[in-house]
Image 1 (cartoon, rainbow, N blue to C red):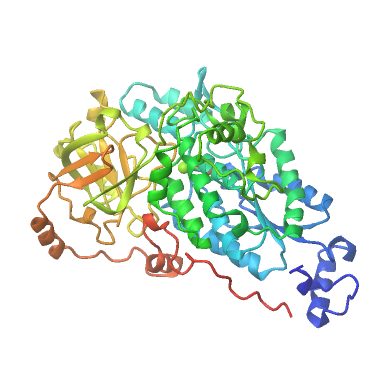
Image 2 (cartoon, rainbow, N blue to C red):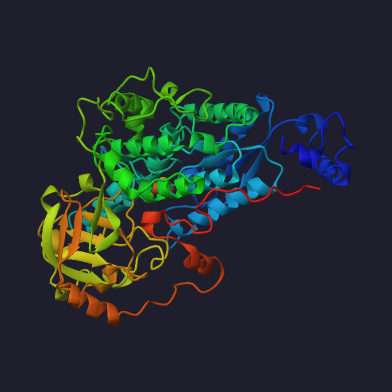
Length: 574
Ligand code: FES
Ligand code: MG
């Protein structure tokens, strides 16, 4: 085992020389007997718990159940606190720091005496970051998803995090509910530890990890506070030791077929558009070719089978009671070619074992012949406004806007948008195409989730609830509306979005997969000559590193120097 290079072997305690002697003496300092760790697989538990992360507030204690499993399987667990990316609190967006957590993951696993890793996370960017880092580190690894929080509750109604936050806020802005009621909603929206319980990025990416075979079967939908979550954590601890002994690495599990199955799963969940960026980034770490076009092609052959908000009616707790991901996967597998059941997983059996006997037990999961929608929920757009592509979650959009031409009203920053949106001088109507730029990977920076641009209060009062909105930003997986996102290249990098002016006609046609700026090419060429690239947002530290190396949305927003396979040398522990 790799860790033996640090400690020596139980049969030859002085054989490792001076350094091994020193390392062993420090293990005594930590309070461990030689027989507790020598010769055993060392399992790093990478824990994204922190006091500021409500989605992971239970993980500090849950790591104890993982350790329990590791000990019982004959391993030696060591918990490592790693960067906590808390979607709600970290600004401008934790997406700016996803690659930082991925680097921390990779470097910790490389530099310490570790043989395998348990990756504990759930809140949006944490699972992609941990998977990217583990893929690059190359050690056997397994995900413990943090699990969704319980359903929200307010005056007899269930509330969904994110989704109902925006809905109630719009009702409040339109003057239809009181401040007093809003303070009750505040307490009812999020009622327990766990990640967002709509089909946001967290539920989407934990499901993607399970569907790739990087988490145990049925693990991703278990509510964070359910006793089953404790047992799943212990099972993961038991299993990682076997995974190390069998030397099953992330590259052996996350194959091209695994990414195809993850994409099919995400699309059949009506999952978050963020998944397109993240899965491309994880695949890049392993040298697996995977693109926006793959998502688009897969979306045309898989139906939406999860009836979960924002595209459906229910919440993750209902999805769990209906059987969780295994029940959905079994239905998906009924569709010829939708999944690859024979590929390897971390579970010690093939992917087929994830769903073989799973039945549906409730309305949050549909049968394959009774789909919520016949095609996947996300469409990839191209056109002269998005040469590198853009995405729209058309199922969360108003159907009548999916083919629309209207005049642009352009905002250059989110601050400008927030301050100006309610100003009648912009003369925004239901036909307007709202444009936000300067919100991409470089401009945001980090592509903040600004993509669900607000609707002016004066239109909300008239009952207008959706507009065509386009940006180089992302959108929360819990958001909805006719929002074109991830326009690549972004305006900050000189994409055509930078050249749009208020009054230009823009065409969105989801059926034709088109996003077009209806301006004469000669006029655009003139505007291009006049365009000056903006200054980098950050000039020092991590921000500067980020600005120099981040790739565009269609490439996964990874750092260019990380987005390929290949291991750094293992350090010599002597
Ligand atoms: Fe953590 Fe939504 S805020 S998952
Ligand atoms: Mg989110």
